Length: 210
Image 1 (cartoon, rainbow, N blue to C red):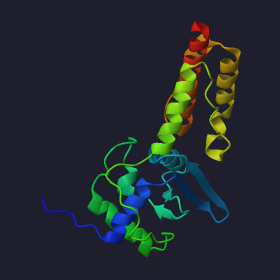
Image 2 (image 1 turned 180 degrees about the vertical axis):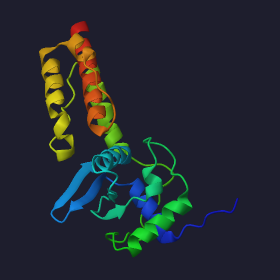
Image 3 (image 1 turned 90 degrees about the horizontal axis):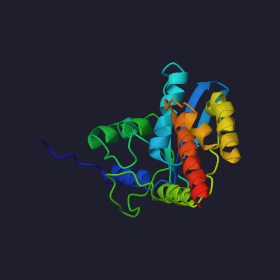
């Protein structure tokens, strides 16, 4: 199988995406209707993108990686098919062709210097969010309730009532009530509720066993 040659600028983009501090999902639904939501990791951004596409009859949206310097880089569709936080990037050649097509179409933002610090780009680097998640998990084991997910964005609107009920049960210490809640993980919103509910149960059980 022929080896794929990656242009230095494209390689720099992959490295920058791997080092992104967060991601932004963007969709223009109309002249004055623009959807924009941040996500801490690429898998979270993919979940949001899939949800907003489904809610808008398959209309396409863009996912941007935001670098520590504040630059934004379009994430190629090939990378958007990565569903695991540590999954390898599939078909680098195709990803690079889509990246160049985006730039030619005027959708790329600021250019990234090819001399950016080198880091393995085969995996998406979400070390900071992972550290935060680990801290929240450790706190739950100590009996500390997790932070409530931020459902202020429009895409979360229909899930806010259920989240409010879950938070109320957690604050009331109702472990069985939390366990009894049925949540269908069809998108990022219910997945966030599941994470909160499960960690809340861990925290309440830790308190009960203290």
